[in-house]
Each structure stands twice: as C-alpha cells, then as structure tokens.
Length: 543
Image (cartoon, rainbow, N blue to C red; front, side, top):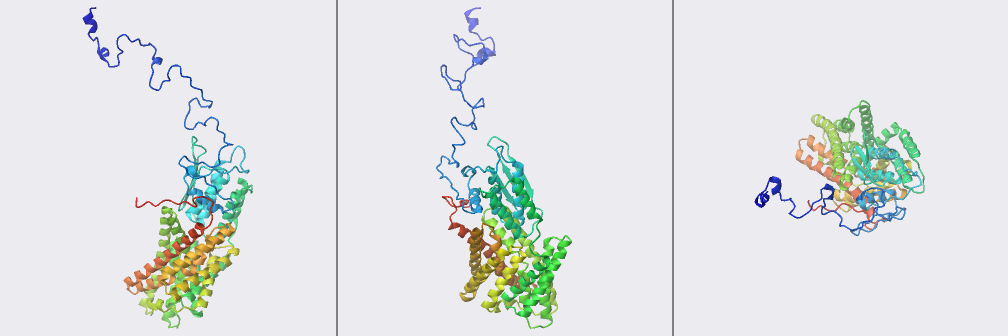
C-alpha cells in the first residue's frame, strides 16, 4: 500500500473525532479507560470503616457516638438550642415544638418505659389516634389535639412524628430514620358529643404519660382509655333537661324578664329539649333537632302575647334561644382559624352556620304564624331593657352553672366557671350600661377576661381550658339580637332584621376572638421554656 493510500480514509470510523492520534498507544482492555473522577496514580485513600461499601449522606461519621451526642440539634445557621422546662404543662411544651421546624425540635429523653427493642410503633400510633379522637369529639381545638397526640408519641420515644387534624379526620406518620419507610395511620371521628368530664380524664392520661417519673405501659394506657369510654355521663337525663330550662329562665331575666317570664322560658326550653331528644332517637340530623327545639319557646312567647298576658314575651323567646346558640362550636371554629387550621375552622364555622339556620327556621315559622294571627310583638323592645345589676349578676351565674351541667363538666370545676361567668357579666354591664361602650366592644373585653381566667385556672390544674371558658361565655351570647332580627324579618322589615342579625354575628365573633386573645395573653406573659417563646407562623404580607 502506497503512502497516499495510507492517508486516505478507509471508512467512517477512520474519520471519527475520538480516533487516537498516530503514535499514541491505547490499551485493549475497556477497564483501563479513565475519567475525570478517577483517582490519580499513587494516591492512597483510606478505606471507610462503615458497613456500607460506599459512603452516602446517611453514613454515620467516624468517631460519632449517640451516647455523646447533644440531645438537641442546632443547625449551622445559628439557631439557639431549645430547652423546655419540665415543670410547665405539657400543652405548652408540645405546642412550642409543634410550631418549630422538624430539624429544630429537641430530641426526647430516653424513657424507662421503652424497652430495649423499642416501642411497638403501630400500637403507639393507634393509642395516639384514639386519644386524639376523644379530644376532637369533645370539642377541643385542632392545635390542642395535635399537641396531645405529639405528647403521647414522644412519651414513648417516637420523636419523628407528625400529627395532622382536619375536622373529622385524624392522621399521624412516624419515620424511624431518614432511610426507613414511614409508618402512617389514620382514624375518622364518626360521632361527636359533649362530655367535659371525659375530656378532663383524657387530659389527665396525657399528663401522666408526659411525666417522666410515671411508668405507664401501653397496656395500662389502653386500660384507662377503655375505662373512660365505658364511664357513664356524670348527670342523668332529667338533670340535663332541668338545666336546659333553668338556663333559659336565667337568660330571660338577663334581658328584663320577671318571675312569670322565668317560668315560661323554662317550660319552653324543657319542652324543646325533650323534642330534640326524640328527634335524635329517630335518627334525624342535628339541623332538624335545632329547628324543633327552637319552636316551643317561641310558641309560648307568641301564645302569651295572643292571650294578652302582661309579660315581656320577647324575653321568653330570647331565653329559649340562649339554650340553643352553639357557642362552644363557634369558639372552637374561630380558635382553629386564628391558629392556622383553616380547613378545620371553615368546616366548624359552616357547622355553626347550619345550626344557626336551623334555629332561624324554627323561630321564623312560629313568628310568621304569630304575626298573621295578630300577635303584637315589638321589635324595638330591645331598646327598653333596664339594667338590674343584682338580678342580672345572679342570673348570669345561674346561667353559667346550668351551662356547665349541660356540658357534663366535673363537679369540681362548676364553682370556678360559675364565678367566671359572673365576672364576665359584671365587666360587660360596667362597660355597656355604665360606661356606655358599644355592646361589641364590651363583649370582646368580657370574653377576653373569660379566656384569661380560664387559661390560668387550666394551667393551675394542668387541664383543658374548655371547661373553664365555654360555660362562662353563656351570658354574653347574642340571643337578644338574634331574636329581634328574626322578628323584624317576620314583620317584612328585612333591612332592619339583617342589621340586627349582623350585630348578632359581630357579637359572636367578638366572643370567640376575645376568648382566644385572653388565652394567648396568658401564654404571652407566662414562661414557656423556649428562648423565643412560642413561635408562630410569620406574616405572609399578602403572598
């Protein structure tokens, strides 16, 4: 072959850009091919002592020992180490950690109740969900339910837990480590009922589990939980019906009623309560139960007007409304919204709206027939309510007492909540009647004191704040504004009626926000145990 033929390309392979230049020897073995990640010749790399053949982000660094590790993780960004004080209620400690990013939460201390092989994770998660179910069914706020679930998990050494509460759905996930698959469980709350005695027992169980000195096994916790479910309500049915009547009678005295009005409102509320129980036994939804329960007090008030009995019929109807207004659900819904649980808050407020519409339908039906029959009901009677301080203070305390019985509270909390309700009405009366403040402002301040005192009482007993606040807001509920708004609508004065209903809605929101603000103020000035106190979400500035 000539030199010219040798320069001539024989094929496409000869023209490749990767063909080695002439004079460069290339090995025949493919394994000799090098890359930019190959180690230079002569560089000695120490072999890893890890069991993994190749190092990864999850490989334990050399010289690391878990016994010598710090109990809290401090990122490189300089976040201060969190130290939670043990003598504070577990609600504050768990709420503090729930509002931290996961990487900043302090690791739980080793508990003696946890065996060497570790807790049974599925059973711990099941116990946590059952405890959360009782709290959520009892009307507790979503943040407090999550705090209780988080406390139960950490008490058994499960630190990488994330609870989640969405109205009727409870879920929790646990990740053993960064390389293990997470374990998740969920539970749906099918039925809800008000029993603050059971709620207090659940709080006591969570408090005992969170105490490092108490050694409660899973079997003992399950046994106590089963005992709570088997326990009967502390008050029989006839006591609840009588309490409903006394509540309506006390509310009628608050808005200017006398002894005859007290008895009439009591009979109407008791009859409405029995009808609601009958509807519940037939399986009717709560909407119709509220509709039926609102009719007897309104019917008795209209009947007294038609028979020309010289009584204040509006006070009879207003007293009956006080026993039905869903103040507990309203406060819980607004609290969830203020603490960032917007889905749960929306669902609870929608539930409150349905209950309120049921009450409106029941009262409007009776008022419509009463107006057509010639009943002389005065929508301006609300302006003629004269203050009677001693009678109204006594009535407000009786209202709070009976409300506490309806909520199935422990007998040891009834006196405290009764006094709290009396203080609330004294503040409201002093601001509204004496100081001539607007009813919305007076209601907000009185509700704020209810929340403040209720939170302080709850912290003193390491219990839930609901038994100390829910019944105490009873005297502040907007029963009068609701009735007169419905009466104006029944008399074809829709504009005036809507204004009165808007005032009722404003009073209800003032109660809910005031109670929540009072609780937050109590936490603001009390030591939580964290350098940054209880950190909340930052303002979004519209984004």
